[in-house]
Length: 305
Image (cartoon, rainbow, N blue to C red; front, top):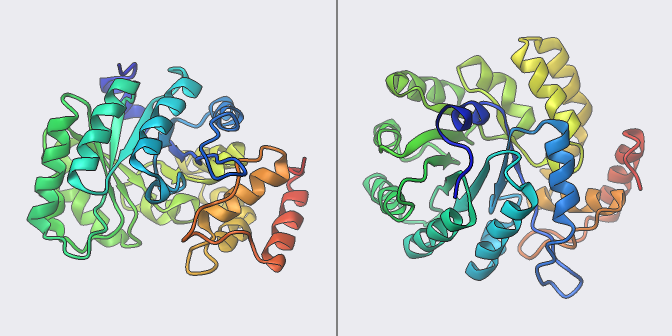
């Protein structure tokens, strides 16, 4: 059962939501062992929330049984030290089943992936989340909105579902975010920048707090330093720190963003915390040029094994 509730969970959501990788072995099977040092580094650095079955977890590359296992593995590694969000999504039946498993595993809240179905009705998304809320029983929900194409009316309807306590806004549209925050100000939701460190400053400027991060798998202390600068409203420092890790994010954006998780896992290998390869359709391995650039970057950070 959940160990973080009410105000403590709500406060944590204003911080960094670290999206955990899913480790695989050489035969492409789940290999939970390497996740423990990843979690320990993140918790020790001060990351506020950890997320299993997010996009950096290769959620859409996991079988249902693998996603169910990984929320249990994450809960075991975290051991109640910080809140755990369990990602749920895909078909409504799969999402509801994973919601029930995540609750049993001890997740403190669910992160509901926005349906990637090519035929998505705004009111259908509301029904989708409502069904997940019913399956989750009393577990809180955090919406993960990767685009705002469903419109502000539907976004507000989603936010007003009783179990929704926060939104990870992963669309590069700060003005639309500002309007969504204005329309739902009475709910006092957690609005989290869902586009990682690079987009955190403009999203902070319109009212979001905290941000999602895949960098925390590798160098969580750098993410925490950026968060601390933003919280202190020291934007010049935040921008300098973001500039220092921008080459890492630029590598992740290569190949139509298909190297996003690849760079994280390649960096973990260079650190000696091998979490295996990524699965297709993600890029693997990195190109020779990208691998050389990543190694040079990691050496400059004194992060090589």
